[in-house]
Amino acid sequence: MSTALVVGAGPAGCAAAILLARGGLDVLLIDKTLPRDKLCGGLVTEKAWALLTGRLGLGSPDLGGEVSRRFEIFDGKAFLNDAESPHLLRFLPRARFDAFLLDAAAKAGCRVERGEFRGLSEGAAVVDGRVVRFKCLVGADGVFSAVARAIGESLPQKSLAVGLQADVPRAGRVSDLHAARIFFGYLELGWGWAFPKGDTICIGLGGIPGTREDVSAVFRRLLADCEVANAGTLPIRGAKLPNEEYLREPASGNVFLCGDAAGFAEPLTGEGIHAALLSGILAAESILGGTGAEERYNEACRKQVTPIFGQARLARSLLFREPFRTLALRRFKRGKGAMRRFLGVLAGESDYKRFFLDSLLGR
Ligand SMILES: Cc1cc2nc3c(=O)[nH]c(=O)nc-3n(C[C@H](O)[C@H](O)[C@H](O)COP(=O)(O)OP(=O)(O)OC[C@H]3O[C@@H](n4cnc5c(N)ncnc54)[C@H](O)[C@@H]3O)c2cc1C
Image (cartoon, rainbow, N blue to C red; front, top):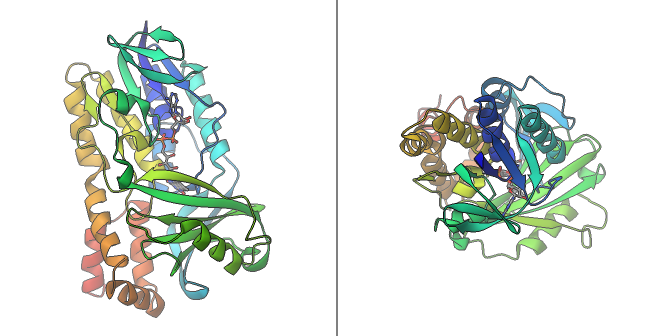
């Protein structure tokens, strides 16, 4: 019997597995795809990085990609404004980031195996064709979590956002990009991004639930506007991410759902790495605390992971609705204050409540 079975070797699963193994538990970490290839912009904010270096104690690794402070906003092809972030923005290749976390889990003593969780049977997990018994189960298996499904907690399909992405060589209007570039004006309910990754640029477009446009066609227009070669035929990839819903009680008995599996992604920015790492950490700490782990984890998520989600949803509904969108873009164009305040939220120094208050008071 493994004391802890962790399903999914993304940031949520690895964070939980590392701490559980360090806490002395026998941990089996499984993933159906190893090595993983997660579609992601790879923007790791300061608050996410602080979890890696601080609470997970993983030092300050060089994971390639690019580090910058510059943040730019565009409305379609038109440049609106830029600002320097007080904190570093890290644009990391997800494959390297994930491989680093998996290696840290193995070094902490976890057994890492390729295997697909298929369901629960009489309190044990069915992994491929075998039965795996456990004392606690961490479901960190992403937005279509089979663990969540097994305990009747799946996220509704219509609550998910969609993201499309392509990694392109440096050329055209993104040849010299060394900043986070955000594009409004393409989707009514979403935004685009271009993140520098060293030799390549990762360009993406995300639409929240309710998006009516043909997202692929709009994405190809964004690629063409960036003067990407073969914008009309370039292979593009898409994936879903949590948006409209998250689980208020992500623990149920001895099953703990973390990261995307619990619907934990920030609804305005789509940032999920921070919530994945944090919820993985909280699940492990709750389990290691002994009796009352279920309540402890639910409470910790309520206090530390999800408070920003409601505020972000409100901010999003303003940013994506006229006349507020026009007013917001005008404000971004007029001065750098609003952008700096937003960068403070992204770094975890501030929240949207303070953002609006400071904006109203002109601070
Ligand atoms: C297009 C796009 C761009 C994004 N950009 C950013 C960004 O720039 N910054 C940011 O912070 N967030 C971003 N996100 C969100 C972020 O990628 C996710 O929130 C984050 O990866 C969630 O981590 P996780 O560990 O919960 O799940 P995942 O990283 O999804 O890991 C889940 C793992 O579970 C495994 N698995 C699934 N089912 C099973 C099963 N049945 N059995 C065994 N294993 C299983 C999968 O193989 C996978 O390895 C983006 C998302 C998308 C779609």
